Amino acid sequence: MTTITTETIQLRAGELGADCCGIASLERFNDAPAGFHPTAVLKSCKSVIILAARFPVSTLLSPSPAAYTFVRHRLVDKLDSLSFQLALELELLGFQALPIPSSDPYDCWDDSRSHGQGILSLKHAAVRAGLGQLGKNTLLINHQWGNMLWLGGILTDAKLAPSPLADYQACLPECRLCLTACPAKALDGTTIIQSKCRGTSSKSTPGGGFVYSCNICRKICPQHQGLKQSKHENNRLQG
Image (cartoon, one colour):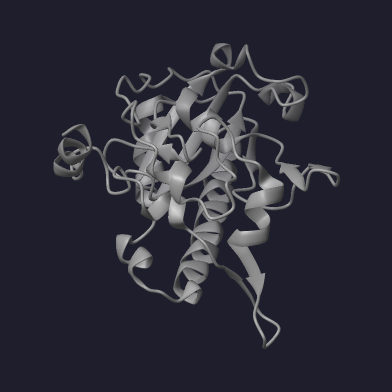
């Protein structure tokens, strides 16, 4: 079997179109809920590769939900294609490599709560792969790209060196902008009540289409363009 390194994976991910890529070792999932540990999906898993691609920030400027919906769909396609291709290449090198869907389908669904879960929480895996921290809006916040990232992943039996964990703070302790602005009151600073969010965040159009109609928690966040870019806004909140 060919030897492969974290640096090689990250380089190839960038060539395929990822804006960032991190690796989480299996030991970082010791606190994963029962049934959602990586080895529940791929028994031989030794490393979790998380890939991320960014939203164009201008996506948030339009009052029309059509633009945001289009970009979201394109990012789903991009991350699914990226993880699919990288998994194929890892297999050619002799490794097992299972791509994880970047969105639907849900593997678990609780109809009573309108609550869905995929086979692996990509945003929690991204934290374990060093790509950022979760904000109070439950979105991953990365130091460079803020919360403007979409995620994909691969489980592999390749033993890869884990990426350093992010050591920065995602949200200012006193900031409550997303919690206050959420029209559905679906955020509590720790999790999201999906049944409340779904009624506001998506809708059918008169012509029979479908749009994601709310992105306030992404847009209002002072960190949505990255920690460095929003430094002046952090000063405003602290002052």
